[in-house]
Image (cartoon, rainbow, N blue to C red):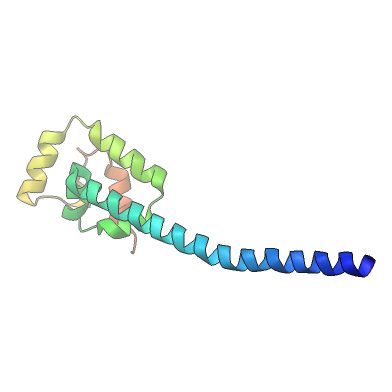
Length: 121
């Protein structure tokens, strides 16, 4: 009887291991695809925003920005940009192409953007 129980337990463990071996790669692939889709959607939204235009004007690649910055920091950047009272100056400077990281004191994201332009991709 103990041989039967040992054999049954071994078979159950092997089945669980097989399920795990199949499930883990599937979960990883799903998460990679979901993360990629999320970053692409977020990049599309940011490109349309003033923040995206400022990033582009400063030469910051939006996809690199999305990949390298923490989600909470991106959220803070968007919120600060949306709450900005200097939108007129920002829009004019971007339209004129007169944007340099060391001369954006009008921007609520000045410090963060300066760090981004100094950081290697």
